[in-house]
Each structure stands twice: as C-alpha cells, then as structure tokens.
Length: 182
Image 1: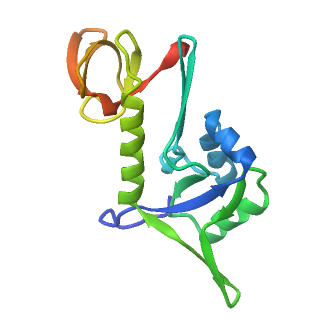
Image 2 (image 1 turned 90 degrees about the vertical axis):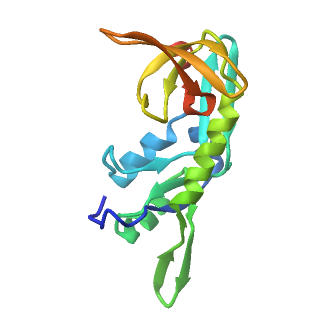
Image 3 (image 1 turned 45 degrees about the vertical axis):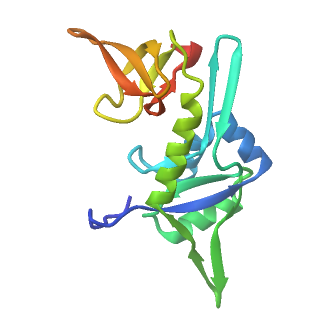
C-alpha cells in the first residue's frame, strides 16, 4: 500500500461484480483473485462481503452486499481501473468520468466496518455448540477454539494452546465457523 500518514483513515474502492464474480465470491476465491490481479501484498485490506461455510451436511452462504467487493485505496488509481477491463469477474469500478480523467469514488472505512459487523451478526446466529470457530475480533483474535456452550449473545469457547487450556466468553459476532475442514 502506498505510504500514507497513519492518521489518515482508510477509504475503500468499490467494485461491481459480474455473475461470474458473484460465484467466485460465494466460493471464497474472489479475494485471492483480487490480490493476484492487483498485485497486492498480504497486508493490503480487501473485503469481500460473502462468507461460505460447510458444517455437517449444511452449507451456509452469507452476504451483506451482493454484487460488490471492496479494496482499500492506496494504489495508483489507474491500477484499480485497468484490472476491470482484463477481468471476467469485475463489471465496473465505481468512478466518475470527465474530460479525459477518471476519479474513483470511495467509501469511508466506517461503512466497511458496518458491513463487517452486520456479517458477523448474521453468522452469529449459525454458531452452535461443538463448532470449531476462529476468533476474528478482540484480544483473542486469530485463535481457534471449540464452542462448549452458548447464550443469546455470547459463546463459551475452549481455547487450547501448547501450555494453556482455558474457556473464554466471546461475543458470538466475533466468531467465524471453521466448518468441517479443520
């Protein structure tokens, strides 16, 4: 990502997806595609508002903004525009055109945070006792555990590390199911 003052808030470039892009998002492959197409490093934020997971015989697909995805600003504007013409997955980048110039339309970081929170709330309903989950927010972010019990808003998660075995109470919206692939 281009150097910027750390006090600057991230803004997000918005892509409209083709039908093939929506399928790629539902399959969980769109973020990887965007990273390769835009030559993004792992630290450059990308948000695809789709989540698919398999648990038992049930496959659940969640999306909070069908047909769109978001990439943090910071690249040369021409890179965001050029990738659309070469892609079967991207229909358009939201922008305005005038007098030979293209100006990207971006959304504020708070809008993407709101979408991420809504997605977390949708997924929280699907959390069940016995599920293996990844903690995606808070002080235990990045750890995995198993849900041992639930309340309306919280999950009691068994976290096992090499030298620690503990049960922590985590908000359900801060958990993502890991599905059957663990």
